[in-house]
Length: 138
Image 1 (cartoon, rainbow, N blue to C red):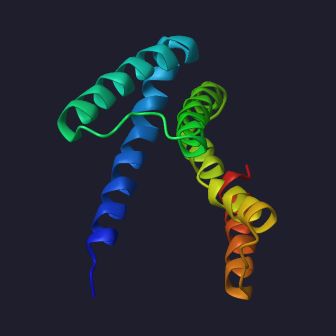
Image 2: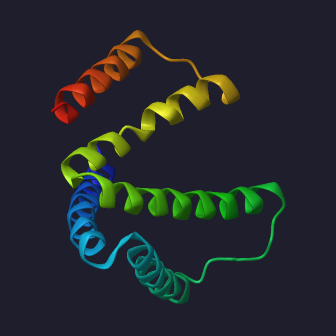
């Protein structure tokens, strides 16, 4: 069984976990506007390095190209609102709430793409919401 995907996913988990903490530190010191701007510069610098090293084809290719651009815009908008939320509440709560974004993906995939949801997935979604309530309650 190929477990490379799991190793990469765990690395992602670790990177985003650290990101949530250092973003909180930055936003409480700098403010959400400055954190958003400076983080965008860091993102762009990392993106440029990726583009130079991997040399992807950037030629427009119709609707998938538009979707990729939209994904980037939505990702930035999500980061922006995340930074604002971190300014308003502790990272231990904000990160938990925002980490439930797969529930939105599941719902939209069901509605827009006709994907099916198993009973196990629905129970998992319900448990995730219960976990959110337990973790974020005062």
